[in-house]
Image (cartoon, rainbow, N blue to C red):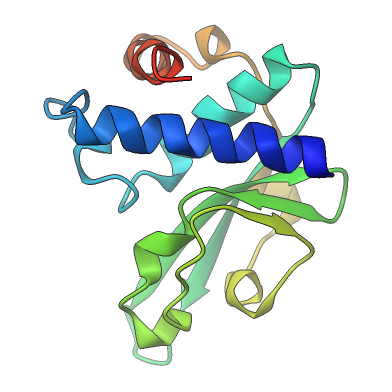
Length: 153
């Protein structure tokens, strides 16, 4: 588990360094990292972990607030059936609805924050694949982001 934590922390640090150097300025999602790019970040991290021999699943949960029409999604990776790997939870650090969650790299079992999001296993969980298998819209963009991140590893 410690080795996994080291790998994931180094990957998040590389994203932060690339962000600080302006590498994502022209990307519609990553220009606000970690806000609003949890899905892309999970796919990119999942690809990196796959290259390291670590198979994960992509999870996208949904939060449905008490106010009709309010909703929020959040994505992370799942190792096995219980270990969450999340590198964008800190995007919620100012939001009391989401417990002002401020952990930039979380690896562990389901905590109170992740439990806020409903996950339908057949619909919201899929095996992580290599980036080039994500299709013609996602693959080129995520490949470019991945290449920028890897430069900072």
